Image (tube, rainbow, N blue to C red):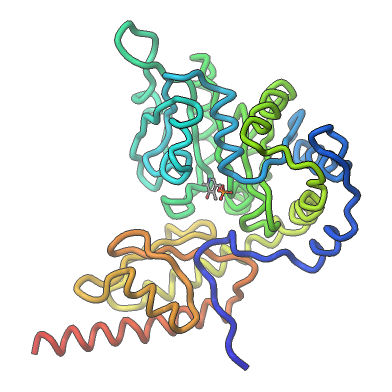
Length: 356
Ligand SMILES: *Cc1c(COP(=O)(O)O)cnc(C)c1O
């Protein structure tokens, strides 16, 4: 039997479980643009309930969820304060400018975790000369900063202080369930002070498609209109919502396994000569590591891994990202480490051969 591929490119690659497929096949549906899809309605009520909020909205992707929230919270010409590596700024196709007509005002913070001082330094108030802040945005876990997690006091303080200044705060919680597991808290405690929350059903939770916006009834009513503008009114979307409901019920309690696997990978990587990673920093299911200096580039390492059935994307000349999820088990992680060790051993011996 050929060995299956170990796909560590992202947790988006998770395939629907048998329970999800059954729920999809049996889903009761209606036209969701008319608000008549009972399964979508149930998913939205369930998501609102889990987050202790008034309402929620199913959107096709996390990008649409974030960009919808930004559109609702801001006016053209305003600024959105976010961390320099924020997904809304770097990985959403420039929509922040193209759709909402706002610009990012970024702050670089250690491990992607801003505190109130960072945010405050970036806020711009009414002036006759420059644009003003319209929204603060945090990301938890912080994807491009290695899946790091906001301490609750830090995100609470940012929300409280922003609110004192009349500024809304949006959470890109694509992986907020991972953040909650890392802190050993419920998502309500992490998110209760935010004005709006986006989370993905389609990442580590394992649903095939879908993200949710959560917030007040007034916010969600506005978001519904923006979703329609973007072509996100999905008709018999109960087929997708059914999988989302299963994901919400079944997966959060299993996410700790992905975190343990990420830690296992990080510790294994740290033992490979020249590989740069600090395992103590790995809190959730994402890790970045630096390839040894003077050897193969990250993209060459990635190609050689792929040739042996291990997928992981390069994120710069010298770094590679790995993301754990329920379709890769501990044995798969072990195999990824073994293949990488062999590839890097070749680099080292050819590098030393060159210097002879
Ligand atoms: C994946 C992700 C999103 C949304 O991505 P989609 O592919 O559009 O669903 C948003 N924010 C973060 C931090 C993400 O990792």
